[in-house]
Amino acid sequence: MAITPKINGSLKESGDLFTLPKDRLSAKGATEKALVLAERLQRLPGYENLELAPVDSAEATLEIAFAEGPEGGYKLKVEQEKVTVEAYGEEGAANALATLYWMLRDGKGTASGCEIIDIPECGYRGFEIDSSRHFFDTDTVKSMIEQLSLRKMNRLHWHLSDDQGYRVESKAFPSLNSISSYRIEEDGNKYGGYYTQEQIKEIVSYAKARGIEIIPEIDVPGHVVSILAAYPNLSCRELPIAVTPKFGVMKTVFCAGKDEALDFAIKVIDEVAGLFPFEYFHTGGDEVPKDEWKACPHCQERIKKEVLADEEELQSWFAEKIIGRLRELGKTSICWNDALVSGKQSDDIIIQYWREQGTYCSDELKKGRKWIYSCFSNFYLDYTPDVTPLRTAFAFKPVLNSGELLTKETGLLGFEAELWSEWIPTKVRLEQMAFPRIFALADRAWNGSDSYVEFLERCNKEVERLREDGIACFSMEEADPE
Ligand SMILES: [Zn+2]
Image (cartoon, rainbow, N blue to C red; front, side, top):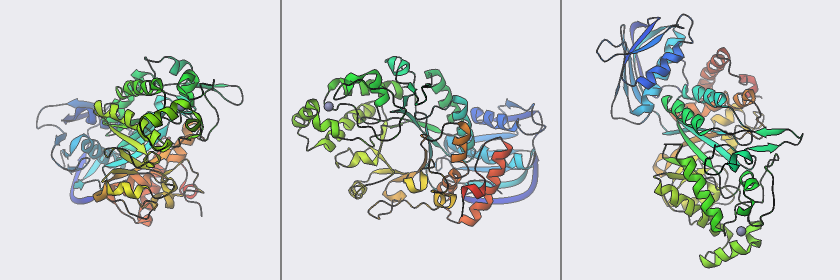
C-alpha cells in the first residue's frame, strides 16, 4: 500500500473488495471525522453527490468506535460490506480515515479487504507556519492543514507575532491591529493583516476535525517590534519605532524592568490563550539581545531587587512570570532552547531545540525535561533544497550539541519542521518549500524507518498526488539536487 507515512504495525489482506456507494456514506460514531472523509471523497470522480448519513445501527457502512490504546493509533478492518475502525483517541479516528481515504482514492471508490494495525512511534509530529513575516489567508492555512492531516501529522505550531507583524484580532488592545498588524514595505506599499477571533476559532475546529491540534506562539520578550510600534512605552528607551519590513534579530525588546510591560504581555497571552483550547502554548524566548537591558535603569533595578545574577537571569525571571500565568490557565509552556541559558527555568517547560551555542542543554537533559526536536539543519524548510535537500530532511537524528541523544525515555516528544516565511511571500512558495520535504518528518516520526530508498518510492507517489490536487511542490529532482 503506497501511503505516507508507511504503516507501523501490520497489514493483512483478505481478498475481499469493498465498494463505496456513490451517493451515501452511512456511518456510526465520530461524525465530525466521518464528515471530513465524506468531503474528501466528494472530490473523487463519480462521488460528487456523496452525502454523509449518520446512522445509529449495525447497518452502518462505516463504523467507528473508540478504544484504549496509544494516542493516534488505530485498527482498520475492510470487509466486503463494511469498514470498521477501532480508534485510539480522536487523532486515531482521523488517522484511520486518512488511510481509508487513500485506499478509496487509489481504488476509485473500492478498497481491498484487509486488517490494518497502525501505531505512531512519536506522539508529536509537528509543522510550523509563520504568519508574521508574511501573512497567509485562512484558505492557505486550511489547505496546509488538510495536506498535512492526510499524512497524519498532528500539531500545528502557529507563529502569530513577530517584529514584522501581529496577527491576532485583539479586543483588549485594538492598536495591536490598527498599528501592529501592518507595515510599510521598502517599496512604500502597506502590507499586512490579521486573523479575526472568529477565523481563528474556525481554523482550530477545522484542524481538530482532521486530527491536528494548534499551538499558538506569542514570542516574548524579543521579536516584539510590531507590538512596540503601537506601545513604545513598553520598551526600555521608549523611542518611537515602526513595524519593520526588515528581517533579522532586532535589538529593541520588551523592558523587563517595567511592570507595565509584564502586565501587558500577560494580558495579550490571556487573550490569545482563550482562543486555543489545546494545552500547549509557545512563548518563544529566542534571540533576545541584552544591549538595551544592560543600559536601562528599570532593568538594572529589577536585577538588583530580585537578586538576579545578570541579564540572562532577568530573561528567565520574565519568562517565569509568563509561564506562571499560563500554568494558572491550565497550559503547558513551550520555549525555544535559547531561554534555558541561565539554567533557572522551571522543570515543567517543554523545550523546542533548534540551535544551541554551547552545551547547556546537557544539564537540562538530566532534569527530565520534555523536548521537541527541530534542529535547523534538518527541519528548517525555509532553507532551499540546495542547502537542505530531501535526503538531509530525512536523515535527522535527535542529538544535542553535547552529542547526547534524545529518546522517548529521556523525554523526546517528537519532531517539528519550521516554515519561517521571511522569503516565502506566497501560497505557491509556501507549498513548494513544504512539499515534499516535510513528508520525511511525517514518515519517520510515524514509523521510525530509516530506509531512504524505500521512502523515495512512496514520496514520488505523494508528489503525483499533490499535483493532481493542484498543490505546488518541488519535483523529486528539485527537492534532492545532486
Ligand atoms: Zn528596561
